[in-house]
Length: 244
Image (cartoon, rainbow, N blue to C red):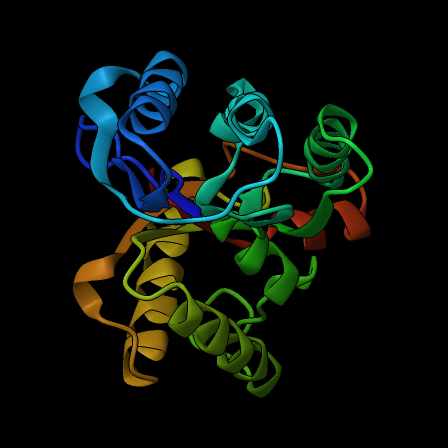
């Protein structure tokens, strides 16, 4: 049996390790598997926890497993490749459905029909995507010309707070925007005050204050035409942006 724990997210300039464990039939098999992993991931990332023992393996098992350890695996985050005889199980996160199907398809094509492949890969939802889905293009409403949230604005922020709880401490910038009515200086001040009001509200819902940055862009980044009432309404908005 071979189990390879594939790389997770990188940590502060250092790439995550790839841990390989389990039992193989002989030292030559162990060395060949480690060499293959080091070619794909780099020697410094591979953590060897393999042991040699009495195991039964299908014919040409070493060759088939070597085919599984290919650069496609580097597309998987926080995953696991598990090979038990002719049973192959793969799980972890990939960026999109195309990658999910491509990796599983290539694995199946590299093996003979006696092998069974369990594709447990899933498409990862980005942290920014969680926030965007919760906001769903809605406008967080304030009283006219003020930094006071309306009841409707609070309801949206209740849902945003729940979404941010799922991100587990990820840092987010709350950015206030206005239309172009009035002076730029006044709008910059208003947008900053509204961003501060949003932060205060979501902190009151249990979000850690140190994970929230705020800024006010005033009228400087419109997303619609300020010459129409509809455009002005769209430009008066709060943006939530994951800080990388």
